[in-house]
Image (cartoon, rainbow, N blue to C red; front, side, top):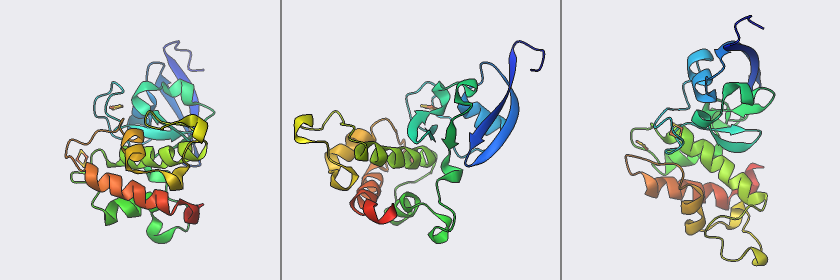
Length: 185
Ligand code: FES
Ligand code: FES
């Protein structure tokens, strides 16, 4: 305890590392990452849960860092764009990062960390059997990541906005990884 009721000492688990910090109780996970941990990959676009630029993975699920308090993230495994690549991976990149490069899935790059984290989370959600708004009939089964079509990818990534309009490349990149997802697990 700091003795100050407005702040909290906590330890965030981020990209496999324990990061101790003292934060104002109101600090979001996004600001804790950017301002306290020096991890500026996750971006602040709207700060209101509307653009997806701040998307990170929390316990393997997509989360808007701007909507989650840092104090609520303690004890959970947070992965940011700086940590998505597995150790020893080709060129130090996650397959989704490689696909974004190959498909020109960005222009200015501001939304890209959030897009990539969101895409990784979206494929994992499909593999868990989570339907989307465009899943035709859950009684017929939810398509796993490898079976996602363009409509599913568009819907599942619809929470991530791109002001540059790089959606065509983003969609192709995600479809590329989805179609080969078995090779990356
Ligand atoms: Fe979090 Fe826009 S900055 S959703
Ligand atoms: Fe510029 Fe998406 S690449 S906002």
